[in-house]
Image 1 (cartoon, helix red, strand yellow):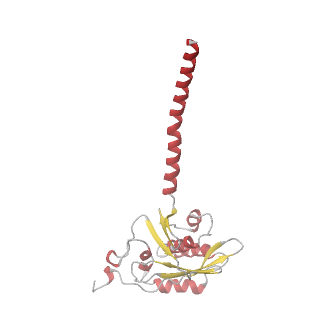
Image 2: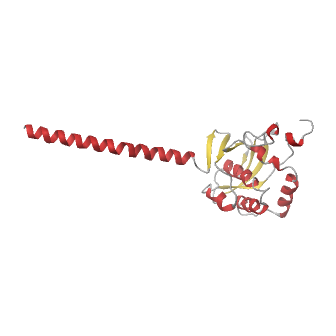
Image 3: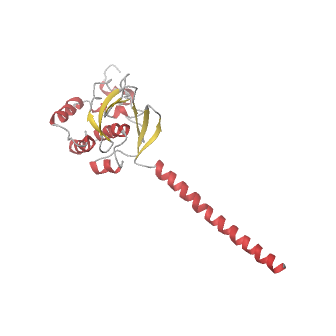
Length: 211
């Protein structure tokens, strides 16, 4: 009988040791998963029924990097946010910028008129684009906080069948700026339709003699 108790006690000790050794591994896996999510190149920080706040660990420099940030474009809010991220490349490489916008346009390419429109609106006023990221104000010459974050909003009239008008908050404007999207029913994806958010905003401090 004593030997039986000894065997059972030894088995209990071995079992306990096994549980202890496996516990950190499980915890580590959970922590790693959480860390991976928080370190995603493009992610949702917060959301509600009428807005989403997105975060970019870094901004895409070409269409391959843009494509790697999302598996599909089924979220219209994400498509709007990615449009601004693509436009941030305009000053350094118009070619890369336009290729990314072509991707976001889906079945249609960016037209010659649209390219001319973007060039006209951003001529000497590229600061309009970084103004859409949090922390960018006229006083700091529209320098965004890092990591880059952008808020996309909707209202009760935003979605009309396969069309949507969403809104972007600019640090240089008292009103949110619209951007238009169109849904492709066969895939459920929302593509860029029209960039309507490039109206003038307040001049940055470095270019304002009255600041």
